[in-house]
Image (cartoon, rainbow, N blue to C red; front, top):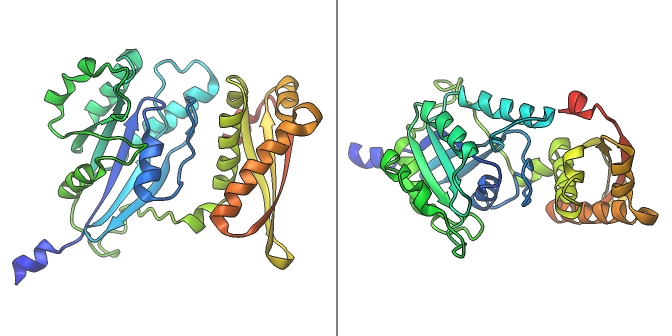
Length: 300
């Protein structure tokens, strides 16, 4: 009887997710959890701070920390701050580490820098080779030596949600058994549900920023951030959201507004539609653009 109870004991642990920019960490988290918890785009620097989310099933809970990608050369202020935030996560107590790589990109100095950081973490490590759905271009041979260093190696497609289960099962094997809240008050407990996302000023700002990354030119997204100033429920089920796009220079402000205000209208419409789908509410989004050369110091 005791053996059966032990077999059913739930597990709980914290998993750190680390890798270069754009290896697919946020896509993996979103598709694993089944809802958007982190914005995504093909451009580097999309994720700017750690995102925390919980995966739960009958085996227990895995609390994932999705870190921003490590930049090999952090030359601008924002890149340095992003690297600093990821470095701080490496100092936290975790039960497992996922080191994710993209086999379609050459191994370079940036990858070596990430690998060096991963090697310093004492928790069990899992090598995850992402984007196996892409086969036209591969540098898999450059990463093959890692399979000797990391016995726990998995190949997945985060985009197509392929081969997640063997990885998740392996993670549950190494995390500890779940204990009571009293005994485990020091362990961080991350809960992130869809409705909590859409009630968060930060998450709403991130959704708007995602639209800037997806629908503006290469240079513009890196000059911007988004601040949500107000979220108010009004009459007849209408939710009013007031937000500002901050950019470093007037020329980018003009690009974000567009001719006749068309670009800002498009960005607002796309963000509003996604928020409405997520909340099942009617949304009025008031979106403006301001020039603030020092927003990185003030708002990041």
